[in-house]
Amino acid sequence: MPTWSVLRLLRENPEEYKEHLRKRGLDPSLADRARELDELWRRKLQEVNEVRHKHNVVTRMIAKARDPEERRRLIEEARRLLKLREQLDAELKRIEEERRQLLWSLPNIVMPDVPVCPEDVEGVPIRFWGKPKVWRGHIEQFKEQTERWGFKIDYEVVDEKPVGHADMLEYVLRLGDTRKAAEVAGSRFYYLFDDLVWLDIALLLYAIDYMTRKGYRLVLPPYMVRHRVLMGVIDVETFKDAIYKIEGEDLYLIATAEHPLAALYMNEEIKEDELPIKLVGVSPCFRKEAGAGNRDLKGIFRVHQFHKVEQFVFAKPEESQQIHEELIRNAEELFQGLGIPYRVVNICAHELGAPAAKKYDLEAWMPAQGRYREMVSASNCTDWQAYRLNIRLVRKNMEKEFVHTLNSTAIASTRTITAILENFQEPDGTVVIPKVLRPYLEAFPKAPKDAIHPVRREKTG
RNA sequence: GCCGGGGUCGCCUAGCCUGGCUAGGGCGCCGGCCUGCUAAGCCGGUGGGGGCAACCCCGCGCGGGUUCAAAUCCCGCCCCCGGCGCCA
Image (cartoon, rainbow, N blue to C red; front, side):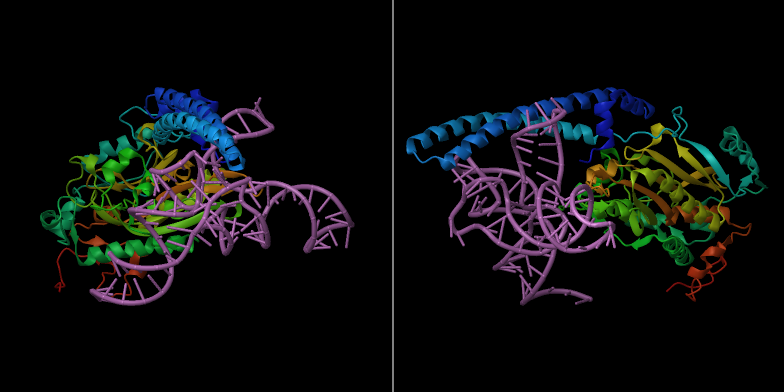
């Protein structure tokens, strides 16, 4: 019998689960309410089952009864029990629903090596890569993001302030138009043209090529899913902030390929020796960004729509931590290939989403902003999603558990483009294209090969 | 979108018309017996939940309804197959 790890902990060691809630900055009394309701439900279930049993016994006697008088008497008795049962059933149903909602609102546990931090700290850097270009005016804040955490990072001082990706896009290269897109679709939308479109495509191919070589199975998933699926993979808050709904239908645009990939094995059993199942999905992503306020309104860093190559793994519980490391390493290797300086951050407990027990972000250095910004997010969701999607692991001895699910960005197109625009710009506005992308541009005569130039030399059309 | 056929405990399948004994069988899988080993054969197990346990409840795509009693009858929805229509 598979048991969800959170429920088991709640029953066996509620104090420990409360500690997990505290680490997340949540009210630990949530655990008490959940446990009380769980117990109430169990008691009520016993009670109802007793009455159901009695009713079943009488019903079976009716089938055998020959004597009409006896029959009439038994049917009377069955009717009486039925009334009682209906009453108890209704009560049970109410409690059950309440219990389900409460259980489904519970966040995952927090892994022991997840940092617990003050409110203003989102994550603890654990390693750095590359030699960032730091503008003279940003040196202090650069140190805030490196030395404060005990890392001495070699950097290159830049005298001229780098141009922000939004201005590169709109005014220097003139290969993006967010003004017109706002008129056509709204803010946080964009038109990209020519070389930036090639770059978007090349980035996706680069990640796809890399991941498939590593043995990840390439998947093109549905771009819309049912409500039930989303409830299985995200919490209600994320749902409200991120998800677009199709009018009049039970369909929602995916915010990431993670959603349909997780649901690929919904309601299924996976045999132990079939795991791990490693997938690489490619899809557009649609996000409302409802909670974002005015943040990153300019440019294409935070947009309603982009392309992403996503890593997703179904794993055995005992191997999920190691696979989590593998996923973030894959993402790092992709960014190393591109030559973009980054740091990896161990996300603090209070910043974890409900599904994740642990999360690493890969943050690229953005020379114009003077900040490390999120490019990749790698989460170990342990059995949180599997419990909800009912994805079970069958051991050799036929015992059942829930699988672990993990996901990580490989490449998110627009964000990676912003990092390229800021990191590889030359004084004259030229943007040097990372060499690793060359194979994916080579095939197309009109695609740029080494650099994107500020002056448009080709007419569109 | 319309008409017809279908969805049964991992897979295949019986049961549905004619409501009522534990949803029967085959395959696969797990455990045991037998055997020098393997195979075959034989026995048991193989959906979910509650209970320390004996045991009990629920479960035939999903949700309702009729009935003392529903896999079985009725209604709505989802999905699959075939035909027609529409579109590429």
